[in-house]
Length: 134
Image (cartoon, rainbow, N blue to C red; front, side, top):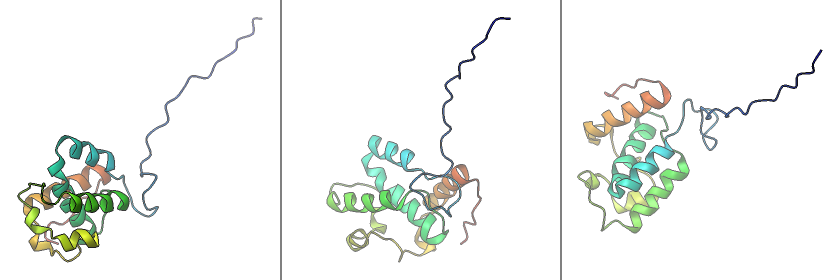
């Protein structure tokens, strides 16, 4: 009887459902990679992503990017504030960037475009539908 030696096939590890830097209590996955990719292609998109992340976090109580990336985006925007061109830039103040927070922006002040985009990102990454009237 011949001896058969079976070799283990290399198996690719699946991507984590929750980003390793994510809070253990937060469901779904964070979109840091997608956010960075978009900002590399369009540096002014930092405004849109910061607004969407702020809306998700402060209004909907959900995270779409890590706290570290959110803080770094605020610092980067502060450094290049005069160069940034975006139609929603007026919603963010230098004081917001220095504080690293947009907690004082009310739900009704966020453009519907930002709310809709944040809603889609939350649904696609975490499988949760949110109430846009909130």
